[in-house]
Image 1 (cartoon, chains in turn blue, cyan):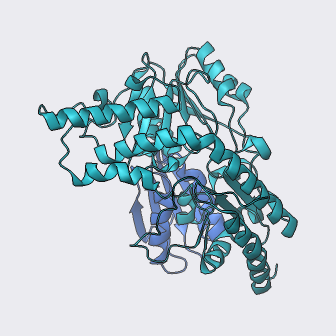
Image 2 (cartoon, rainbow over the protein chains, first blue to last red; image 1 turned 135 degrees about the vertical axis):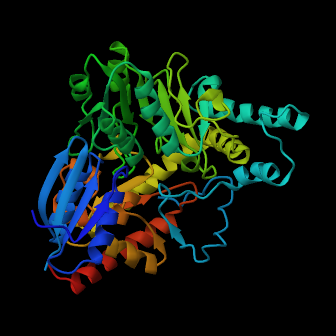
Image 3 (cartoon, chains in turn green, cyan; image 1 turned 135 degrees about the horizontal axis):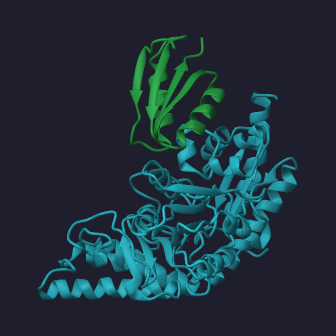
Length: 77
Length: 402
């Protein structure tokens, strides 16, 4: 897995906050840069899949450790 | 249809802070103006020396009497016992108390709800999931209606709660709470109903629908924002969400917001007396709005159930090929306030969970519009939308041809 340029902690937050915070963080990234976001909202898996497919950013990887999801997202170039 | 007169009370003056309140207001589900008759009763509670309902002096006793008066009025609206009414700061808080409170107090570790609930119920359920409960989100049909038998199938031996909204705020569909209430009661599982949107507009009584926990909102029935209530059946026990001095029977600590609660009580009385006639008036206006829009925009589709299957004050539709955000902006420029039906999705731009659940295509998701009518809606406002929306849609299509 490529190293993340920015990490974002969304633990404890619920929809819509993980999506909103991810969107904000991605704005500060350059094309091709990588964001790693962690969330324990059960809805965030569907939300992030939907958000990345809608925005064209690439959902490189979804990891899961217990209740915690780890999303690796590459900003569209 | 004759231009019907509004209710006996004058329309509240448009707000000072906002300044330019639109002339046509069709976002009552987002926020309702507070009825001036409610404000009149609240005023002395804000301006006068009013005690803390828990205080031992005479002012406290007066405050306690006012609080219990409001409790009785709210209970009467839904055919419930006054002692079961717990005042909260919002319907969201009442939903949290119902879902988390019931689940945490129960032995079972499973909750059944629907895929189209309000975000406050969904996120309370997700919080339970994070902490080891399992939750079944029952799907809906193309109208957004839950099948009671699907709820029955989702129930398990360890189901601690069934939670279902009485009507969906985004697409207006009424849910089969009576049928689900019967099923939950047969299985001995507490039944929570989110009554926001429904209470005061469509008959809903706790014993009739075998409801054990009922959420209602103050502002939704023209009371002040900042108040809500959860009615709890006497034999149902909850774990409190907010702890402190033990107010509201220990279920919701914190000194009661007496002015708002008194306002909620007055609003409950008014809507109990005037709600049926108001619903009939708004239903006629709503039907005219929907029929007129479908006539002028033949490709538009109503979301949610038709006719008596939906909230009487609620119209929602998708217009393929135009973005709801753009339509709402254009309508606003023409002095018309409407919504996309979901504040949450307005902030993320994601397709709403409700429209996803009823299986709308992506195009449709972009074009969902929600008009909610209320106590001061006039036929002239409906005409204004019928005039403006087709022009707005035509303009947007011209700007961005498909």
